[in-house]
Image (cartoon, rainbow, N blue to C red; front, top):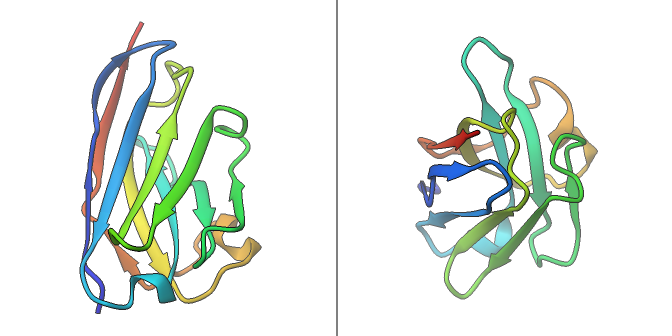
Length: 126
């Protein structure tokens, strides 16, 4: 069992930056690939980024590619999402997720992951 708790959301001006964190419980954090998703009101869940168990491999959704960086610290059981150049279309609840699988299926709609956090709200002001 893995418990995930996101933090770092808030209000930021368009063009600004934000770093989200996701702290995981348990001693098996390094066994899981980790990632971020987001969901805005009345929209489908959207893949944001994923990172392999070691942190050596990452991939991103098209909407954030080039503006965001996912990273992890296995000693701290934490995964991060650095978002830069925030846009008016970025506001959403951002969720952290974990799965034993790490491959392109993370970005496919409806792909089932093993564990989810409760989410953190990101708001962008123009």
